[in-house]
Amino acid sequence: MHIGILTGGGDCPGLNAVIRAVTLALVERCGATVTGIERGFLGLLDGRCRPLEASAVRGLIAEGGTILGTHNRADPFHFFGAGGTDCSGQALDFLGRHNIDALVVIGGDGTMTIAERFARLGVPVVGVPKTIDNDLMLNERSFGFDSAATVVSDALGRLQTTARSHGRVMIVETMGRYAGWIALEGGLAGGADAILMPEQGYQIEQLAAFARQRAQEQGFALLCVAEGAKAVGGEWVIQRQLDDSPDPLRLGGIGHRLTADLEAHLGSQVEVRCTLLGHLQRGGSPTAFDRVLATRFGVAAAGLVMRGQFGRMVALQGDRCVDVGLAEVAGQTRFVPLDHERLQVARALGIFLG
Image (cartoon, rainbow, N blue to C red; front, side, top):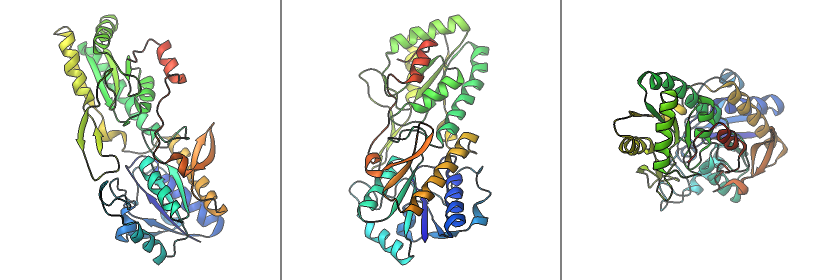
């Protein structure tokens, strides 16, 4: 049995732990040959790959990033861009030339959408969910998310000391795209006074009044803001647009917009400062939780391969590793439900949500 592994989309902590787990489980349990495909789906088109042996992956569990490299703008069905060339035949030729029997694809919703299309072409595919945004359907927790939320929590803790010293309103802008999971989890863990998410719009007048009151009560205010947050009836703040990407919109800048808007409402009474965490949330070593989750996902994916259960994605449901159809996940986004238990916790603590 010859298995290929690739990591698609953005990087995140825990990718190497999955590569390690898939490789070791396949080699140890069925003596499979494992090949790593470099730079995601781009490697299928460029013919870039390398063998993965047990000795080469055993020490990877704590290492951030991905040893195989990744790419978030190389959809073989639209290369490059929505109106691009269909190069899927070239990818199929690569798999055939290398006698690869099945493909383990690690990535987010865009990656799973591409994997599902390959599955429809007859490629035996197993998916492993990866996203710091935690927004994959039918999956309660993605590895990388806990590591990103920990970065947000730590940043809020550090900013609280300087906010108190100067009596400031401090805004932290997180990643998350169109879902607010990172801002919600990181904001709760970091003691944010307000958490703004894409799922629930805010009104600037109410936010300004809240920030003023909280600053008067405790001497500062901490606002944790998802990059996809927007005012009621407003639009996303778009940093730039990449037409050759599966997700062409790059959100970013809501923190600076809020800074200007709050300053206009608060006047000289309170200073407002913004910190954009950006790719700090993607980097570094995975947390213990993410190392274990990535390992569990990797072993579960290897099990699907060995049982010949393809066209499936590993998922976490009720703290159990299960599998779901790629077709049920492709093109879907998992948003924060407005009745979610963590939102209820936030409301009970008096956190402003919009």
